[in-house]
Image (spheres, chains in turn blue, yellow):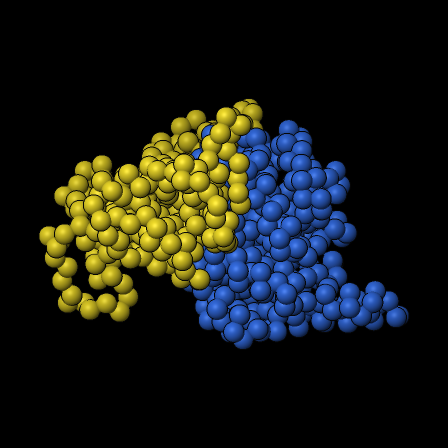
Length: 288
Length: 267
């Protein structure tokens, strides 16, 4: 591993949201990369112009939320073409999407909806991921979703489903540690066992974010609202993930109740310190 | 066991509808009712879409009160869910929905305020396009010029209202005089909305200029735009009006006169 590769792997970025764009443009904070939602940049005007400028100073990660790769309806060819046009234009280092669906019968929900994990849906998602990778001419990363329900028929555990998907399509994984925590807590599963079930190779990026704790019918349910600082148990799970997967480029996301940019940057700095520690451990292990 | 397609269709219908129906049988309770679990997703979907519509229609939201706005757009989302994944493109038909929505039918100016907000949103996000070099229009025969179609900037749109919706909009901006009063009987407006640099701007146009530009925006050729302008105002000067349009940087392309061979694109 060269020194430059080491720096990239031990780097932390932030999810860039429109209220922060002007400040990021003006102050150029020291973050390793910026991630944006692809669907917010599919028009023109000042949003795209800002991205065109920022991409010269920061590596970009393009995070899709609308390709509905877990959907049974035909892939939206127009949307895929716009996605490709944006990828070609801003040349991101990373391109990612979700293991989820968001459209049925022509109605878009703009939300990441869950799918049952069985052989039929594995075939369907593999076909779509392959088509997207072929259209884009590159591999994408697929993110594990946060989930609030399970289907009665869903025989394949999520980490196995993701591992098989990566194996069949060559896609990488975007491991959202907060989503692992939220999903596992919501179904009384062990988040560390989830990490252990993932293959070490192929984790191309990690996401961190805050979640909320709600109550429904007297039962606590965690909601992945990206509306607060990363919770302590999620930081601990992140540390555990770094021990297992080594340093992986990490992004801190914050979407609702967006704080001052400085607060988000502090969260990224915290991730960077943990990444650097993981990098040192890895080097010591190699040297020993 | 339903197929993936049937399952997703049933979830989708349950999210938009009042009743959860057959899909509940496919969902595990895991200590809750399946309906409560589906409800978590429904809440997310509706709050995301409501926030998006509120961001696009802040003045409408302010005029009707946020709680009524949330109620109205809840009905709207069920009737007209997004047709694409880009939130900035959602909500084009809200003005028509509000015009036909019984609880706010008495607010007759409201749909036109909504149309202005949609035009502003559209202008902000429209594709970029370079203004046409005017020298490309030189040397056209008068007959050829008459059948020339000019393509206007994608951000440009035109809005006519019998209400002073521009004043209503300005009076409801952050920092506007809270005691400001808009006289709704002050007369109507003909507005041009567009992007200028990074900003969206709108201004009111004279009747003939409005008729001319909006006819072009609707895809009419120059001859039709001139006819519309002359019908709107007798003192219409084509040369000057055309020069102003080009100087405003609003023309981004032109289609040469149609021949039997079909139109050719000059830009």
